[in-house]
Amino acid sequence: MGTLVAGPPGTVIGGAIGGIVTNTLTWAGEEVSNRLLSRREHHRVSTVVELARIRIQERLAQGDQPRTDGFFEKDQTGRSNADEIYEGVLLKAKNEYQEKKLPFLSNLSANIGFHDDVPPVLANYIVELCERLSYRQFCLLSIAGRQETLPIYNLLPFPNTEDAAIESLRLEILDMLGKVFDTQDIKYDEHIFPLTSVGKMLYELLELNQIPAEDNQMIKDYLMTFQAERSARWGVNEGSQQKPTI
Image (cartoon, rainbow, N blue to C red):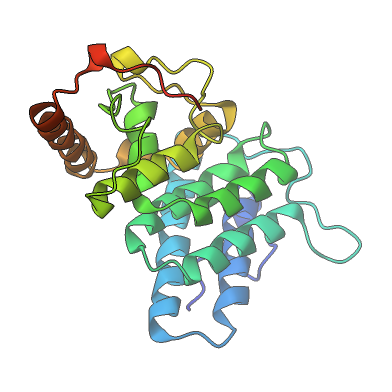
């Protein structure tokens, strides 16, 4: 992967502190890329580095200031917290076969360098969580973050043994409860799923408001179809259901 900015890793472009963000990311990209990668893996890493570089430059042009809490400072081993986090994101990107997630991993790479309120231990957790969440779960988080409705009132309480596809969606939603969906404040009758503090941070850092509306709509249409079929077949409606016990 070619160098994305002039100068060796760790230099400050034009004396600007913002160059540290870009150069640290570039170093991590080259560190990962210098390992034995397949052509596809190389493409994924390069994509995330390039998109993140563009986003960093956008934020600097807007006047946003990189974090100054020591995130980019080297320790006695010669590594910084930024080195560790960026390398972690790019290693996840290397193996990410759901390539629709890559632009959002690039947003994470870019934005983490501007957030003093995300300590390294939280940043590491977010990186791991991003790996575990599917693109469909990114979409669910995007819908909830936009405070749009998720029509799943009749989906959560009971498993669906007849439709493995809808059951897989149900299980993905259940997996998000308590992690990114706040179970204390869910308004089941209004189909509103508030986010936990981690969920809000994910939504912001990954900029999940950028997920294409059509991807979110496909999930909502699928759920609406399920609700209609369930009501028609079994006479189940929202008024006849109790709140799910989570």
